Every structure is written in structure tokens, then in C-alpha cells.
Length: 85
Length: 228
Image (cartoon, rainbow over all chains, first blue to last red; front, side):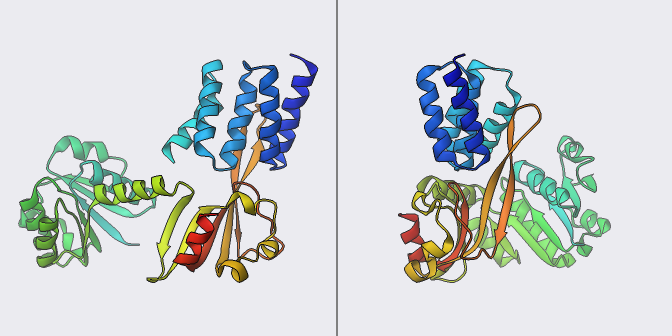
């Protein structure tokens, strides 16, 4: 995992916790250009979209997490909640 | 505490019985099918196998003492009419009945039903509404022209305070509350949300992307915000 990629993911964590979701998404899209196989990236993307009430995008992101990491319990819980809404 | 009796434990009846029990109401669940009654054991206060068209059995159960009866026998039109009539005669204050058709509803009203519900139609209306306006979660009609709406804040509102937005001056609507999801980091590295509710927000409150606004105003003005 490159240092640049790791920094981008950490920055997205910070933006999410600061409720700056647009910025988190921008950073995560940038990270996606470097690496497309990290469930953490799509998990953060799902969280940011869910917080913004962008349910369709959030569902897509959590589905990608589960494709890459089928045992991810939290992604499954978020996805279930979004489907039942 | 209000007491409810639910007659007919199909999909709708069992769901309403369960929902009322979860709200800690005393619920008596009745069905003529033993399997349906068994499925409610431990969920509701009491469940009984009984043919509710039999007036004597209902009387012996003391049905007249219940505040509200919910009759969910949509498939058997005649039975639900008979049961409604009996429940009113026995003195149940409020009888709510699931209807299958307009004609069914008309007859139910004639025999004393206090409220008729069409669960499938109501659910379909809600789904259609949410598909037509995905950003609107709920709408309560206050009068013909005024309503309270629960909607996702338009993107243009993000990072602006209510004072900046001047909702009352520009749109004629008032923000009654703001509902917000706050991300919380958990020890296992996952993230969850806790909900924050700002009631009666002031001019200094800032809108964050994804906030849900509860607005009160004329329907026409609310519509203008929805279209932003």
C-alpha cells in the first residue's frame, strides 16, 4: 500500500468524522485511482454517502465492500439498514 | 394504558399486534388458526384460538372492555362485516377494519366501523411518494395549504447557517427541527451513526450536507425548496 494512498484514506477518515462528506468523497475518488481493491476505501465512501442521505450511492459502495470482503459485518449492517429504509 | 384486540393474524394483523406490543400496549391476539396464534405466543400479552364470528365467544372473552379492536380479515368479507357489527354491539369504543375493496369499506362504515384501512393501497401510496420525491421522507398535511415536511436539505444549503438562508423571508417556511447523522468511530474500526435532533434551531445553526430538515410552511413554498 503506497504512502500516498494510506494518507488519502486517513484524510477521508478525518473528513468523515468532521462531517465534511463532500471533501471525504473527493479524496476517496482520488484514492480509487491509485487502488481499486481496498474494502476500506469503499466502506468510507459508503459511510460518507449514507451520512449525506445518498442511499443509492451508499448501497453501491457497501456492496463493493462485501464483494471485496464478504465477512465485513459492519458493511452488511449498513447495507441492510439502507435496503430496509 | 389502552388495550387492543387484534382479530385475524395474517400478515397485517400479526404485524400490527407485534408493533403495538413493542410499544408496551396490552394486546389480545385472536385467530381461528392455531398455528397463527402459536406464532404470537410470547410476543403479545395473550393469544387465543377462537372463531371471532361467534358472538358468545367474544362476549365471554370480555371483548367489550377493550378500547380498540383491529379486524384484519381482508380475505373473508362477510366475516369482517359480522365481526365489526358484533364488536360495536359489545361496546368496543373504536373498531378499525382492514377493507378489501371500496364496496367492502362502504358496508363496514354502515355497520359501525370507526376507521377503515387499506394497508396495501396506503403502502403503495407511500412508496409512490418516496419514488417520486426520494429526498422527502415524510409529509404531514396541517391544512389544505399548509404542511410539515421532512426532507433532505438541498445541496445549496450545505455549510450555510439558517440566518444565511433566510428561509422565512425568501421562502416563507420555518425550520422546526434539524435531524443529523453524526458519525461515530467504533473500537473495531467501523463507523456507525448516532442521530442528533436540533429542535427549534436558531439563526446560528449551520446546515451540514445530508441534514434532514423538518419544515413548516405553505405546500407551494415547500415545493419551491424541494425543487432547488
